[in-house]
Amino acid sequence: MLLNSINLYLQKFIIILFFSISFQIFAQEIAVLKYNGGGDWYANPTAIPNLIEFSNKHTNTLITENPRSIAVGNNDLFNFPIVFMTGHGNVYFTEKEAKNLRQYLISGGFLHISDNYGLDKYIRRELKKVFPTIELQEIPTNHPIYNQTFLLKKGLPKIHEHNKKAPQGFGLFFEGRLVCFYDYESDLSDGWEDASIHNNPEEIRLKALQMGSNIIEYAFKN
Picture: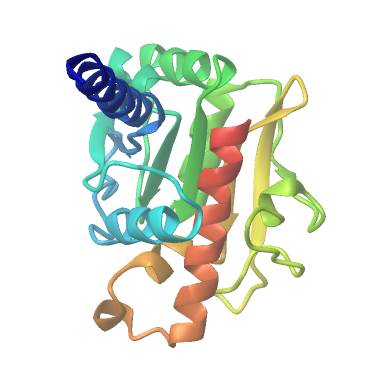
């Protein structure tokens, strides 16, 4: 009888230990990229927390609720499978920062950039420091990033009007792997913010969150 009780206790202990270890293994953190140049890297503060909540609910991720902010030149950048970048103004990478970001991306990291209007000419310039010989390519609608848990048959959704242009999803590919996704004329991160901030219709916010969740899912898998 005592032996049976001990065995039962050990079985419960092993189960608890297993789930504790599993949580530590599969729990993830994502971060917001902090950069110099004067642009507001901290824009849309509710966006990533809302996206994390949506992703955890709908795609079974276990992302820590509160995202970290990480400087582009910080070695801790390598602790995050995906980092998010947005803003309205100037971006500037030093040579050291560009090298660190490049190493992060070719080592398995993933960068999502959301043009919050006014970022485009600066980020294109700075990405050439990171990958001098690689050009941004428009991502076709049949690419897996649009076809994860959520099937976005039309590709990148239009969230916020800027210049009456169609939304475009661009990417940087290193040795065949998509390492950076750039949403232009879409403003996904506006769609992730609290509904009261931009007053986007619920169906628009839902499309933005679905696309964002697909980006996270793709980054985790690739």
